[in-house]
Image (cartoon, rainbow over all chains, first blue to last red; front, top):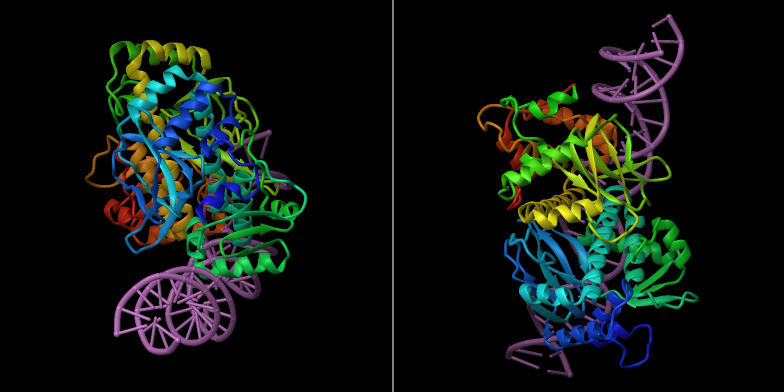
Length: 248
Length: 248
DNA sequence: CGGTTGATTGAGGCTGCTCAAAAGGTGTGG
DNA sequence: CCACACCTTTTGAGCAGCCTCAATCAACCG
């Protein structure tokens, strides 16, 4: 299952890992940078689905990279409700601040099985000193992430459910599919239950279900067994008012 | 009008400017740091209410500090709708990235008359090199801001209108009133129209009006002529499920 | 004094929620 | 191999929070 996440677009074997691919899209890297990332990848461990990676209130002492699988930032309420603040896709990192020792105000947990490298803060700081291009790429990655957060906020604040869902699908498709072929259907794994989608969108799972059916019957998408197929990308983006950021 | 914003708690004259006050609350500053901030303040200019400070798509070449008055990040829609993403209060800054030249994905505009210092990026970078405590304070300020953004997102995604409004009031009161006396009413300027509140909360101005009336008739607050009075702070925070962040 | 902006109120309707139940899938134990 | 529990998806009925449209009123301003 998890192994197919990175390969849903049918690329050649032996390609660089997800982190390298993501960062290379943001800033040119040198061979030394790539070797460093490969070394980090070697320290990655496998974690099951639904595992907490960081609890609200914890003081992070490391930065983690997601080499494979999905995770999410979230805030939980006493009554069981949950808001997903951001999705973490292969290549993403979290616990981003390299210096200030501040407790987290949100939790992080895996959504699928995931391969994760946890690098102590000091090591990252030291490595970045000797790898300026890597540092630039990471800074840009942070900007991109914040840009997604703002778009997500607009989504929650301003869009009705149908468009909100369409926007999430466009965002994920865009983040995953930088190398997608534009003709024909786009297809990717979206390993979220309807309940998790609801937590991300600020809706109930019942309503998510009905919204997905409307998108399906409109011929825009298909979503079954964790596979999202976009039939009409142009119309979906128009509906969602989706605009790709300047960097991402 | 604007001159009273900083003085609504009736403090002695000649106290440090808003930026210094905010940063000192986050990390200890030295006399040299304070002098630097005073120097920056001297370069501040007055800007009218409702003026754009940065347009979506612009590539920022400076970092700006708000010494007096209010401003907001926002995203506009074609149809005239607007989402306010964050409020900027006296002491806050924006266009925060010191390096990457990335176009803004949101606009910034004043909500009131405001006094603003615009410092070129290179100057800031150079100054921070020689003022490590200032650099620490600014990094922490950035963390606090991101924490507010996440809380705002939860607000938009999960809370019904009444609680959403209560949460915004608590947040603003908290950010403004670090030195407030806790007994009796809390009172501060909230120079937003109901339409602007609606843009911040993802509601219509009509509904904002009704929600304010409910809070008023419940004895929780009073809001007239841009002055917010909190009668029952404990109940308001409980209603809003407001928790102050670890730093702020 | 007319024009504009913001606050307020009312009527009516739709979106999205709550409550409830059933169906399909999957893993577990007997 | 079946029974059972559990999770996810799906469907229905009814309700209410919030929106839309519209009009009125107060305050300010040229």
